[in-house]
Image (cartoon, rainbow, N blue to C red; front, side, top):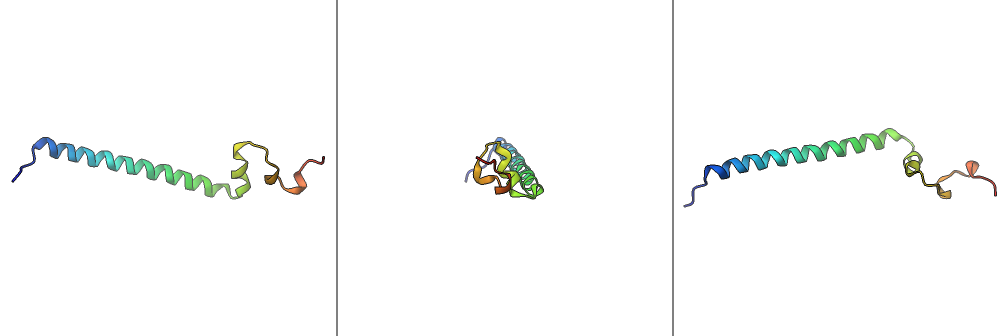
Amino acid sequence: MRVEHEIHQRRKGRNWGVGLLLVAFVALIFGLTVVKTLSLGNIVELERFDHVARPQLVPQEEAPAQ
């Protein structure tokens, strides 16, 4: 039989704590992303966020005449 040393028990507890903090952080970032995405309402606003002018994103009535 092998008996665990006290230091291994402390490390295991610390690892669980760090793991829970990591999961909580990922959940927080995911939640903020979902809320921000849902609060936009119009998907065109999300697509325009990168500030790149792409003709396929501009509705026909707003397209400049050439």
